[in-house]
Image (cartoon, rainbow, N blue to C red; front, side, top):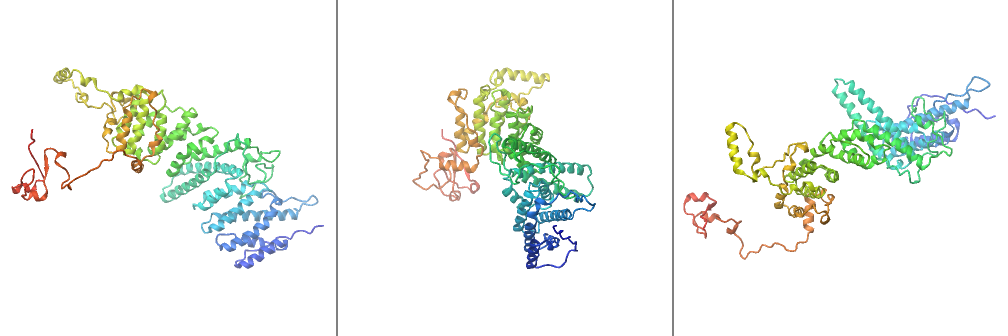
Length: 623
């Protein structure tokens, strides 16, 4: 008959500080015999950020070696001790294992506290993280313990510290495992829903304490930033059609036996309910089924996250990556239409960044957005040419104006709006505008009248207009003759509605003025519009991407690398004595200081004292 295990004695915590050697001795005793089981609570007290890292590490190594072989045999924390059939007293062995399970739960909680504490060193945090992930791997009867992982993520998200080091370690070392990603998506969906409910409740019960409300808002924003870091650093999903080799962190995938591994009764009660009903014959998932389940969890996690009140920096970063990292992997991308249309209606830089995702939903997923071009027209401001994401915006703008079904008034409004902006934007912006207008004129022959258009009211029968104008004024009928004078542009640049801008009644005179632009690349590029763009066989579209990210630096670099056949050379036989020579300014002469004091010159003599204050004199032009 086997001897009964020793009964653990609950001792008050010893306030005596043990040395590193004593802690090592206590650990060796614990590993050698059950008779020293009461060293376990003593070693647990040293798993705290308040102790030196060497003491914490020594206790951690001993406890990890002690619990690792026992985990598969430990009962669930929620399971009550079983009773013997002969009597009503519980089995002593079950009591012992239940007590060990409670101490293991305390050990896990202490490890999490050390991992998220700002007092802990980075080296110690890395060891603690590896120990926690090892327990997550086998802490559920040899299978993946999602309860410990959930509690660990909860502490990370709710912590008032940034925890950048822990998050970077978690992402770099463990997000490559497919089951870690799966449970991460599940937990992020839960966190986002809880934060959303908390934000709604805080909004309904606003107090007069501004300091408390500010702290609550900062804590919420910090939690959102952590969730964003976690969800954005998970590697992209693989194509379900490809049989990829999935690497699992847990030994048996997602299978969970019924009635087991429900987690601690008051600490670790967060087993996912959906996972409890999943069973597979070979305790594994095929690539297709696995990718399908991942896509559903991925979609739920992102949709829940995007419902949160995102800080502006997180908002911009999400919008900049949404079309590449999120939309292709969603089970139903149309679910993002509310978020993207709401972002597009905000205006400014946020609208520019939301354009990419909205354009994908409209072109690939059948989203209908009636006011799309009106909102896009409003975004054409001088500030957009200095924005950070201007390159992507101009490429999307060119794509949005590519449809041959675009009405003539809309294409003309965009062409005229861009040409007006060319007068005030930097040279790099003028190059982009010329490229966009070149493509518009080639794609939409109906607006080629804008290249050269004269006002028929101003060029015919001017005398009759003047006479009728006098008669109308005398009769009290006011007519806006000034609006019909030669050189008047009928285009309304301040109008936000393209239909009311009267662009078709105007002309692209702004582009003609760019022939004399001070920047040589701009004046040279305008010559591409002199060709007959209606003949599509002889012309090609300009790649806007080549000009969309231009700047003063790129223009300067291109000019330096450009080979010039004829170099302008200034050669003087005599060193010039003045800034301008006589032929440059016919009719004007510029005198030096000595000439103003009375000396003779070739052009005249200054004798009177009144002439001393004159820098230049006008002479009679010789016919």
